[in-house]
Amino acid sequence: MVNLFRRIVSYVKSHRWLLMRRTLQILIVLAFVVDIPEVGRIAHGNLSSSLWFWNVPLTDPFVLLQSWLAGAPLAQTALIGAAIVGGFYAFFGGRIYCSWVCPINMMTDAAYWLRQKFKIKGNLTMSQDLRSVLLVMALVLSVITGTLAWEDINPITLLQREIMWTSAAGLTFLAALFMFDFLVTRRGWCGHLCPVGAFYRWIGHYGRLRIMAVKTDACSGCTDCIKVCPEPHVLAPLVAQKAVTVTDSDCTRCGACVDKCGSGSLSMKLDLSRVSSFRGIPIVKK
Image 1 (cartoon, rainbow, N blue to C red):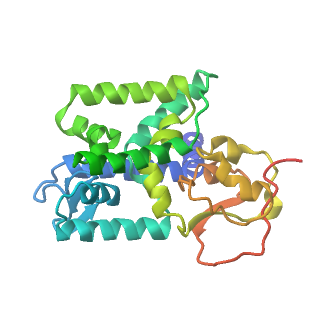
Image 2 (cartoon, rainbow, N blue to C red):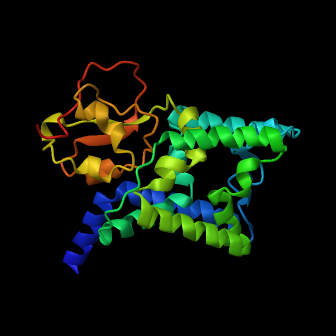
């Protein structure tokens, strides 16, 4: 019994960021579908536009931008909701949405986990600029068609519809996306194609929640942090020993590198400083 307890504690300590992310993602999904006795649902709508705790509007700025480009009138509550959401991600980091909020992340992480377990080697090479191209295309199509062009095929919206109402078309698309990440390329959707991630990357370019190098003498240079990072290039400043923090806006703040670092050399915290003189840690052996 004692050994079991120790194993549980050890697992929680080495997966604390993952467990916190999954808990939040699941709670967000449940908030839209579960009726609490004597209270009801605490969230109405979906991740595109919702009302939380009966008074707080939250609007996806990407959806609002599409609406504006499509020529739709913008409600005051939508503008307030977009300002709240946009301000939050601008301060903390846009792609926090990808790893802490987006339900598709759970599905693509599962596909990647299976990919590793089955040792699938195939990896289609794609430019990460594709997601920016799709972002621009979605905005242009919104202008041309007068509709929310991306929302018709947005996997995030489709997944919520599937959970709430069961849509065969949505399930088919989501299954195809899962198989794409599982069989075709490593983290293909989130890392290369999703325009929502590209949009939040732009919003959170100067986000202050960052991965930081601490306990510099403890680093063994094992590179485990790079191996688990969904966007391994963001660790380049640390690998090159030229920075104390990860400042690349592609960083999703998932905390995988922190969880994996057995030496405690990495941490995630708010960085309110403008310039740091520290030159990083030797994550990669020379």
